[in-house]
Amino acid sequence: MGVPQAMEILRERAESIRESLHKSQTITDSMVAILGSFDHRLSALETAMRPTQIRTHSIRRAHENIDKTLKAAEVILGQFDLSRKAEAKILRGPHEDLESYLEAIDQLRSTANFFKSNKSFKSSDGVVNHANNLLAKAISKLEDEFRQILTNHSKPMEPDLLIDCLPNSLRPSSGSSGNQSEASGKPEHPSKTLDAGVCKPPTLIPPRVLPLLHDLAQQMVQAGHQQQLFRTYRDTRASVLEQSLRKLGVEKLSKDDAQRMQWEVLEAKIGNWIHYMRIAVKLLFAGEKKLCDQVFDGVDSLRDQIFAEVTANSMALLLSFGEAVAKGKRSPEKLFVLLDMYEILRELHPEITDLFGSKACTEMREYASSLTKRLAQTAQETFGDFEEAVEKDATKTAVQDGTVHPLTSYVINYVKFLFDYQSTLRQLFQEFNEGEADAQLAALTTRIMSALQSNLDGKSKQYKDPALTQLFLMNNIHYIVRSVRRSEAKDLLGDDWVQIHRRIVQQHANQYKRISWAKILQCLTVQGASGGAGGMGSDGTSGISRAMVKDRFKTFNVQFEELYLRQSQWTVPDSELRESLRLAVAEVVLPAYRSFIKRCR
Image (cartoon, rainbow, N blue to C red; front, side, top):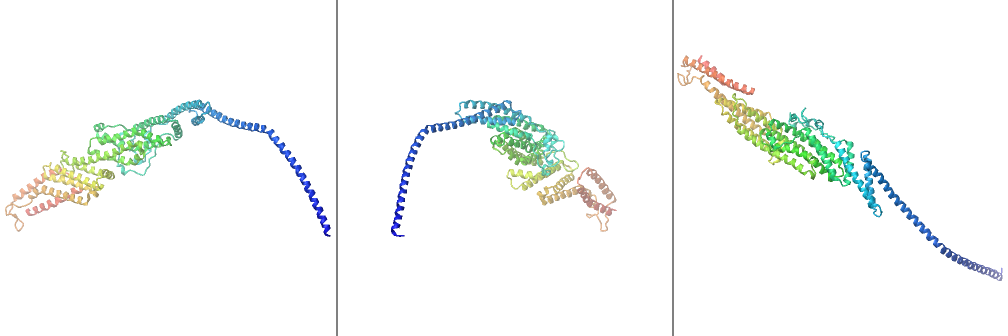
């Protein structure tokens, strides 16, 4: 193909493109015109639709406001409806359904709070006032219900039921419950009979009632009626607790009452008191504490104070008895009951500290601690009184047969009982920081023994017969030594003390032999008879006359008969000592008698 032809083709194509561009421009111009017309129309339509859009928006907002108003009205109406139902339950009272009644109070309180927080409502104040009036009536009925439930289920505990809650080792002897005086019977010292038994706290109020009382108490506290609740509970439970103690046998005793009372009666009452203290602290007070904790759970501000006031009078009644005894006139026989009282307070000290550990119970806790120290002080002073009484005992009644004096057996038994209280005495000595307890007990025992021996020396001088004096001292010192050797006192006094006093017994026995038989033995000698100082020849004969021999035998027989008649009225109560003394006398008299007969035959 030639160049001209190619050029022609190119020209034709260019012309075609130009035509196409022209057509496109024409179409574009037409579209611009059309679109411009649409824009004008849309603008006109938008202008026309604007009022409709405004009305639609207003209607939508109105519907939203109506919905909100309906929902608010529904809530308010719901509160009114709930309030109406709660009011109906409250007016019926709590007797039919206490749980539903408590729910109604909660609902009424919720309704009052709702309207308090929505002051804009026209009827808010009226509804709140009405609800508060209903709540006041409801709480008043709850107070009555609380009082009635508590009163109906609060009964004094029977003594037998309380005693059954104790382990066997802590129970009074058979037939000694209640206010019977036999309750003081204690065959053994308590420290020797305790076992690992555990006290079982009594059920003061049925468990099924406790949740109701707890809920009622919570409602009253929420309503601000703490004081009414406090008084109701305190008066009811304190009265029941005091009745339980009276049924048990607890009674008020003053210092004057204690001093006027015969010792046997007072001793029985003290024995009772020891049991009462244990029952009161371990069972009754512990039960009251548990009950307070359950009823007033979550109300700590009230719980401790209520427990303190419920138990205050009962605790004071018990401790005042101990105080009356501690302040009473001291006497030796009171020492052991004082130690028993001191011991029970020491035993109960951890429980008293735990039960009465709150600030509200400080007074009672300090009262118990003060009484413990007072009993310790009185017991210590009684030790001194006893030692002095033993040394100065002026009993004029002498034992005619030279046997063991009642004072000796009394003192020895006293010391034996003391050693039943070794652990208690150690605690007592520590109360006053007097050094090592065993050393204190040893010193005390030694002083009492010395005081007894000093008194026995004085009493021995009442005898006109010096032989009986020695027999009396021999019997009594031997009794002391034998008793010490068979008791725990031996470990404290020591072997040296025992050996020294055994030698003293032997010395008195020797003195008795010498004084009793020396004069008789003089009759069995030939000294002083005719035939010289020796009185005997080298062949064993003597210049002693037959009449002299007969006179010596007669004198011997007379004196022996007199001695026999006199000493057959004397007593050596210990069989071993009596036999050894008889043998010792025989060893002196019989050889001398045989020798005299042989020489004078």
